[in-house]
Length: 82
Image 1 (tube, rainbow, N blue to C red):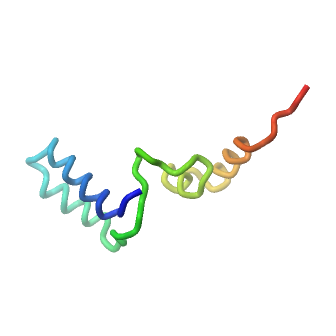
Image 2: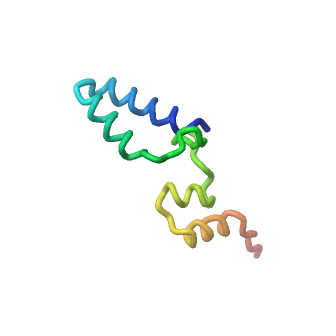
Image 3: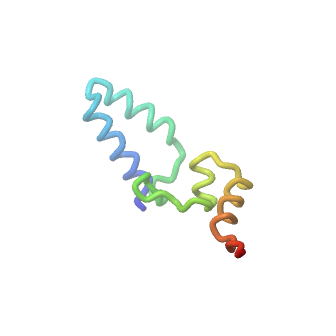
């Protein structure tokens, strides 16, 4: 986990290394997209994503809450014995 502002800045810097001719445009577009976001709030990166079945994972992956509940329920459901 890291402050969202740090995640945003690292992302801008890394993309700027690949596309230096677009760095200013990228910075403006990203900053516009994250206008009003608390950059001191903590967020997760893809290197440490929220666990499957959690509300955060559902939100970030586009799953519905119902789908996330089903995933969680399958993960913790007891196995049937013969």
